Length: 400
Image (cartoon, rainbow, N blue to C red; front, side, top):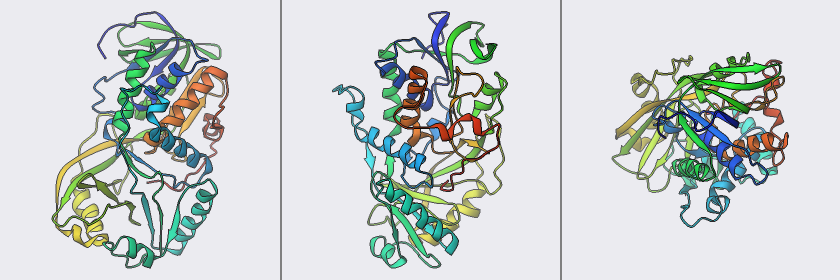
């Protein structure tokens, strides 16, 4: 992406943000045979160095508490599994690496165990392979856990684990450009309305771009973009910490993405391991605040993982970073689809840590809405903007 002005002064669709969501929407739109419009993607940081996409843990799961989120992730899993086919059977398109070691939710209270059991029933009804495991069953499959106090676990080895989202992101951008999508390094600083429609966006470079529709794919900066059309969305950057470590005594099998009752999660990462958590106090942070909190390792993460997997008492941290969730304070679910009054302003915001795995379904859904005026493949209406001004949360309890 080079710093140059847009080639034209008018586009059918302007997408604000070129990271995983913006590029998903750009590719799905440009690949839709029923859409023949022009697309401009405006990305403020073409290096993506500080984008949430660059700090992802690249995981996917079916273990959600709402059917719509399960279906969203099931499409994501199918898209990743059949990536070459979805991208037109181009022989240059690589397969996406996937490691299906699964998620393992551990419950240490009867209340949470009951929640896992309810969720498993819903997931199974949707075709997911989730099963509830007793401590003895967990120990038989994964003898390295310390299961003191654990009542049950919820585990699924089908379409759950790690996938190479970087390859998906790279090829979405590449194929979108091949389809005629234009990317520019710039920033949208204002949006002009005429009645109930967006008519143009103003770029920091000074260019005014007329448009037929605008997609807000601005990640943790989404609230600022929404405010340009007078909308308030409860989306803010929240800091999350990730650590990569080597173990003096590596486990003899893959470590599922384990969600400890404390909230700390850990998983295999190649020949190493990855772990992370939210801070104990979890406020909104500045968009440029990526400072590490080193106390979180000593005070929370290491004691937890060393207790749950005793061989992790002897480990060495090799890498660490802080990234941002685009956190939706209302219900930690995405806001997707049109504004309820400004029909050509479309949201793709507030993924709260689920964005990478949900990006295929989101791009497809936004493409359908812009092209047909409706969601066709999967009804995303329950995740629409109208619930925000109505203050009606669509709660997802299975959040990490």
